[in-house]
Amino acid sequence: MDIPPMHPRYKSLRERYLLVQGLRDGIVAEAGLIAHGRGEAFDYLLGEETTPEAVKAVKAATAMLLLSENPVISVNGNTTALASKEIVELSRILNAKLEVNLFHRTREREEKIQEILLNNGAGRVYGVGENASEKIPGIDSKRGKIDPKGIQSSDVVFVPLEDGDRTEALIAMGKKVIAVDLNPLSRTAQKATVTIVDNITRAIPKLMETATGYRETEQGKLSEMVKEFNNKKNLKQIIEKMRAGI
Ligand code: ATP
Figure 1: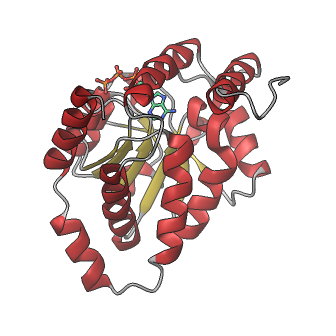
Figure 2 (figure 1 turned 90 degrees about the vertical axis):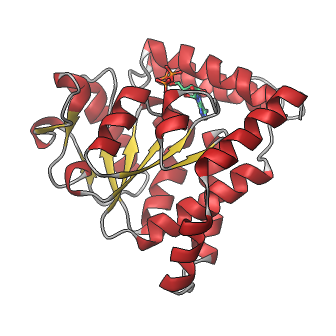
């Protein structure tokens, strides 16, 4: 990328570059570029900064993930293009599994994403090929594929970037769902157990930092943090801020 780091839109241009590159490399789906554009518009309304509400959600999400018996991080093309190194590091800190979970699923993309995660230090990647042998009830075949050793047997699923249908279906399966979504009005944001309204490029490092800080925190304290968090109220505050122009 030949944009100088001092360019005022450097971060945003770099993200676009990574996604276009990801598309060329067969990792990002075409629709992933459109989804990112929608996210960018909401990021503008947030001032392209992590809000205090997002920090609250990150804290509750971290507590929930640390309390989880079998946490799984769901990884799609956009997440891989934007934050593959960080997502692997987060899985290590949280002791969480990584599962490839694609809306536009092809064997080639699954394997490419797996390879990138492994190259970034992942120990094992779930949900690739025949391993994604189970289904999320109510979701059509390709979009609904999950790994019985991964998402299917998880209690908490972290879905940075997900669509509303699958979020609802995962909740219906009895999972706790933690989403990262810049659009507080989306069905994903509204249905998730904890919604972090922030760009994944900021939210994942924030989760890493918070999880590292909470490693010694006792379980009772973590449970309190989860109980005290009110997702609906938090989303309402973010929507009000966006309306007011922050
Ligand atoms: P839903 O199905 O949940 O109602 P949708 O149809 O907008 O919403 P998708 O198109 O599947 O959902 O996903 C795009 C979502 O991802 C958008 O809501 C967008 O705000 C969000 N998004 C895109 N890029 C990012 C990013 N980098 N960080 C956080 N969120 C993002």
